Image (cartoon, rainbow, N blue to C red):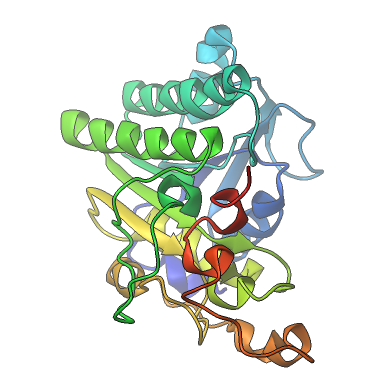
Length: 274
């Protein structure tokens, strides 16, 4: 990433929630390298050198802390959440109530751009199109877990704030964010750390997206989720899982992309577990 990516953008300072998480560990330095001033918040202590403060966004009394964090901010990248299946009370507090709190605090502070870390699990029960066409990023919500429900609700909240308050909200339906793919499914769903930075930057800086959803995947040869919507926002991934295919598939036949439920359903094993 280079600073010229920021040219012409009105987004200069970004608040990143969930700033101690796996995705933030890649995205925060990447955005800073691209010329963005990054401010962070999380329930845990922030990494050294990252300005911001700790905050529990599940706490209804977090409003004043959020207002202070949002002062002078141009956009929010909301990564804070429980990143896996959990009990409903915890999912509700951390993934739904906290998202609404962030959106409303941004609205009150006049911050017009929020990027939400949604998930493929918002539409996890969607099946691979049998005709081989790419699945659009706006595939209907078919959540596969309470976690998936929280991400579908996050998208619905984002759409509400975009329509009701004129905010720009981009929901990233993230696939398999990993340093490298390790399983056959990842050959289609992998999002590399470098492409995660490119995705976040595009979502933060694309002009006037309104409400939009985009798949968070790399330029994988075996992908079946569409990159068209991402290209419209200026997301142009460069990494490809195919370089790992030989290692992952060594000694195995070609996967049954349509018959194996883990490979044929968007949500993979989230949609097939008991």
